[in-house]
Image (cartoon, rainbow, N blue to C red; front, top):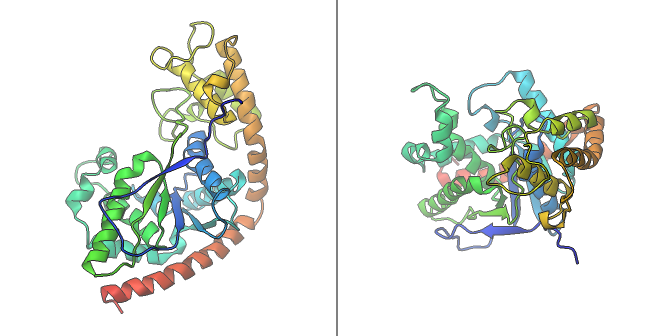
Length: 355
C-alpha cells in the first residue's frame, strides 16, 4: 500500500496546569483575520485543517468559525471600504474552499458586541506586564515609535480569549505559534472561575495538526508565505488564474544545480517547491518520483497541480462574489451567534455583578 500523508490527523494539547470540575459540551471555535483573498499559506495553515475537521467530527457537535474583523484593526484603523471588502472576500473564500455554513456557524466577529464586553471583563484579570511579554507583541511593537503603540496590539490576546469564551468553546484548532496565547486564554478562564467561585468557563484545549504543511515564500524560501513581505510573486492566492499560477511558479526561486533533489540544508528553494508539491497533492515526498525532473519540470508540474486544486475554488469564489449569498449568510449566522452570546453573557454579567 502506498504511504499517503494523513493531513487530516490532529493532536490535542491540554492546558494541564488548569482544570474545570464539570464537563462542558464540546464546541470547536477558531477565527481567521479578513486579509482579503487567502494565499496557499493560509489555505494549508488554517482553512484546509478546519474543513478536514468539519467533515470528520460528529455532526451534532457545534462548530464556529469567526471572521475576526475587530482583530484586523489591532495595529491601527483601515479604510472602511477595504475592511468591508476584505471581510466579504474572506467569507466567500472560506465557503469556496469548502466551509459549509450549514455545518459551521460562520459569522463576522463585529456582529457580536458581547465579545467586546467580555474582553473588558477579562482585562480586569490580566496585567499589562504579562501581555507585554508575549512574543507576538514584542515582535510587532517594533513597527511603531516608542509611545505610539496602539492599545489594540497590547490587548489583542484578551479579545482573542473573549472570542472563545463568549461561546464557552472547549476546543480551539490553531497553529503551534498560538500556544502562548492559548495558555493565556486557559489562565484567564481558570482565573475567572476561581475568582467568582464558578465553573462557567471550560478550560479550552488546543488542537494542532500532527503534520502541518509549512508553506514558504516562493521568492524567499527562508520565510513563510505572507502578504506582508516578498511582493505578489512570493505567494499564490486561491483565486489566481492558471496563467498567473504558471508565471509565479516559473519565477519562483530555485537553483542551477541540475536534477531535482530534496536537501533543505543545501537546496532550500528547490526543497520548498517539493514541499508545496507534496502539500497540494496530499502525497508524501517518498511517493513522488522526481528523480528525472529538472527544476523547470518541477515548476511546471507544480503549477499544473496547483491549478487543478484551485480551479473549482476559483470558480465557486467568482460565483459567490457576484451574488448576495455572502451577505445573507453573514446576517443569518450573525443572528444565530449573537443569540448564543447573549445567553452566555447574561449569565456572566450576573456572576460579575453587572445584573
